[in-house]
Amino acid sequence: MLLPYLIRRLCCRSGLVAVLVVLGGMGTALAATLTLFTAAHNGTVVRVEWEVDTETDVTGFELARKAATESTYTVMTNVTANGQRRYQYLDANVYRTAGGTGTAAPSAGGPFTYRLTVLGPGPDQSYLTVLAGTPSAVQRSWGTIKSMFR
Image (tube, rainbow, N blue to C red):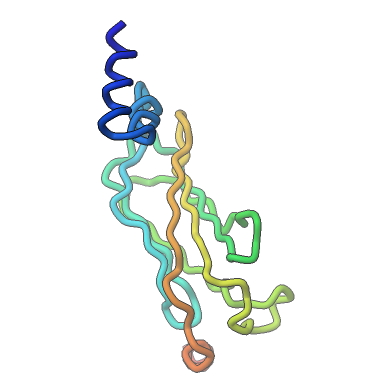
């Protein structure tokens, strides 16, 4: 009898979204607390980094990418949780053409969205980040030239 009263009161004060968040969070323990999830240009690659505060019952992470012109995510990598708290992935194929023959034009479907899924025994948690900006052709070319001499 008390629960319907609390739901009505919360809905009146904070709206339906708050009620759904509270009800969805009842009895659900989160496997990881994500403190950082970013994607940034680093020459010709994109550096995707994430950091977790805790990894209670985390079995791994799944990183996927989607361009604005795509309807589904493509899994880039699966990382096994090892307790190091901070992880990174270098996406070297983000600006490659479909055939892998070189860097694509800016019409490659950006902006790109990365999805990080925390895998565990309970329900999976997913987080999104959008790659900020698009490097110019000069920046991509300079990164390619530098990578030839490494």
